Image (tube, rainbow, N blue to C red; front, side):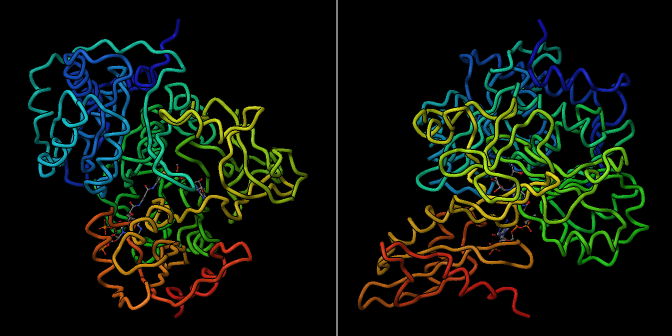
Length: 515
Ligand code: MCA
Ligand code: AMP
């Protein structure tokens, strides 16, 4: 029987010449395919030497580095479950994830080892290792003593490969459980759909703790045996200067708008590039058009979720046989990908006619198994006939292109990161002198959308916006901090007394975009 382990399948596509370059960093380091093979074998042997039960989680909060990417491969290879965590998360956030997921192994930056290991050991983790972005840390020291020969774990399609935490409309984050089969089916299909070719080189400039940078980008490059030009941190100038040696780039819209501010972005600079892909947040039509004007390339926009990996994509092919379906259309996220069933449904989960707006529901081999240890939440998000309710609202036009027009979930997407208003409001409402708060998302020229906190004080309390923001900053990941705080005397409400966030969004919509 075939091994469904995703590492085994990616490994099978490594080039025959293992000494050729697999990863080149912006710091001038070169890693061969053999380095990836040996490095992941050594780390996998280290993890297996811990004799962990099947399904054990390996939680990782480290700065981006090639070694962190190799740790991801090693975890898959050892048949364990990878749990990536945003480096911006602070102790209360990390404590929640570790308590909830109960990882057997935790890997963190050496600078955070004190507080992270305290949380980890309190939650019965077996081992805590450090890993830094300068190739130091106890993980590498320990792995250096392990064999560089390792036989990959055998897995079935349904075996758990990763858990990605994501939040819903209320309450705490939920761990979306993705299997080897979910990820492999998506990677195999996208290789074909996006026309990956021999000689393609990917510029990798995204963080590796979310689906976009970790799965979509890395799996695509590996399954095509393609070299990556690796940036630990996005820098528009560095990406543009790498374009003559590359062919594919993936980014959230903010990365594109930041590159558009660079005079070095020209048709000449990008003439070697084959494909620019955008996703994770809506790409403005203006960005799409300006990019085409400046580079001659039409960005290919696609849509996905942590729970489902990739769902829809604009077409890659300009093949005339597909007539009017081969165009990349700005403002749309394209067509359901092969194998993905997508429908626009009403509140009774019934399919709506073309052109009508409703909830986007999906089904397919890419759709996750459920939320970690939350069977009720999982059941709530699936329809009786097995479709997953994405929480996104949209329609399909007469040509079949999907357009997202809103979200039924209260979510702000800022620079490609998700911010859940309920979480931030919870923190603000606990502050002394606060009566009530509402966090809304408004347009922003750099991050696409950012949060504004609108707050009512308790009678007699004098609230200071700066103090509120500073307090939040000490507790929460930096991207979650509202970019502004407004103290008001009342919030607009409907007849049921519910705050009308749509009216607040309207009121504050031009705060950051006014020229
Ligand atoms: C940084 N800051 C932000 C954000 N990032 N504020 C709001 N939203 C953000 N996304 C703020 C920090 O709080 C800080 O503020 C200041 O900017 C500088 O922080 P720094 O970390 O230096 O920022 P940066 O390096 O310029 O980062 C911006 C970025 C980054 C490169 C756009 O946010 C990024 O890499 N975003 C990509 C996220 C991503 O990969 N998403 C994919 C999710 P202060 O100085 O006040 O503290 S996967 C997904 O959504 C689905 C599945 C899909 O479809 O792909
Ligand atoms: P996450 O929870 O990080 O997996 O974010 C998934 C959400 O990002 C989706 O439910 C959408 O709301 C949003 N998203 C992803 N890609 C796009 C896109 N191309 N356009 C609009 N929204 C997107």
